[in-house]
Image 1 (spheres, rainbow, N blue to C red):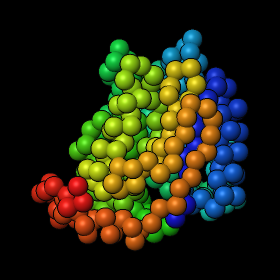
Image 2: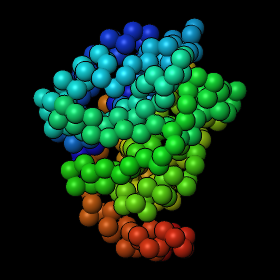
Image 3: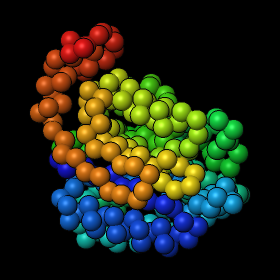
Length: 265
């Protein structure tokens, strides 16, 4: 299966961001991708107003997603992204949505809010209360995560125990000392914890690092982006995943509970 991750600079204008998403969906479909992961919180962003994304929140039947759903109806692509959805007066949930054939086939409210490194996402955002689902994409079982979820191995392991072979991660990973190193290390760690592929898409621009990556089940980056807008692609293999898990005792379905060391290391 061919997978893609797209990164771009989110602007303060939701219509501009919607058209960028549509263009990336069209390009990924032309390249034969079955799955496209886009960044986190991509309705609107402004360096001078950190609350703009929440202020711009739209419902799941709002105009932003209607534009993307119209494009989704024209291709066989599964597209994954997050946006802010109103949850109360001046508040929102950070909601991951899965689009396919013109419909929202799954959604997930971000569990682990980014209250760290002088940031406090929970000031305006309400956390989710349910473990995200595992969905099917072209025969692959895909577990859903969002950004800061990456720092919590229990969630990735839970998804793997529920059958995930691939983890997806829309993000807006904030720049800062050692943050790029944290990003690369944590992506590899979650792939190794679970022997899952990982497809992570990051917003790029003045605040966030970009650096979208596609990671194989042994933690190796097979495709990566820099800090500029870009689409990256990789072909992933269920047969290769099976071979890795057969060689690695800790990563068989029952073995995830035992956490043995891998034969391959």
